[in-house]
Image (cartoon, rainbow, N blue to C red; front, side):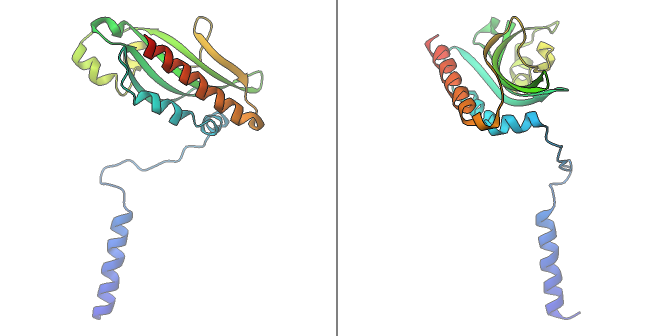
Length: 183
């Protein structure tokens, strides 16, 4: 093997190494996207909620966002609770959901209160775990708002009205932020 062939082989090996996933990481599997997921993407809902979760509010601790899926729905959710030792007792989900109702995709924006369900409260463990997931403490799957929840918006989604839905989402989140900051 001549020096030129060895150099070419060495460069090919380096390129293959660059393209590899980190050792031990799971192989990326592209899940088929549902129509509900596409609706949430069209509204840029994840980024809109991520902006709120990054803020430092005086009255609440805010986490997320995270995407949740059900049989006929998808949602992007942030979760928050009041600051203080007893703030954990009620967690609130603020989210945007796309779900089916009468063979039509509905867009819902709302707030769902969740009572604490775990048998014991350990503040140290809770503080770390709640940042990534609320399901173990509040026994909820992130489903869309129902009766008794605070529904801020519910309309059938029409792609030609996408920008109107998006603007409504931005306005509702701005209003929510104002309420939280006002105390």
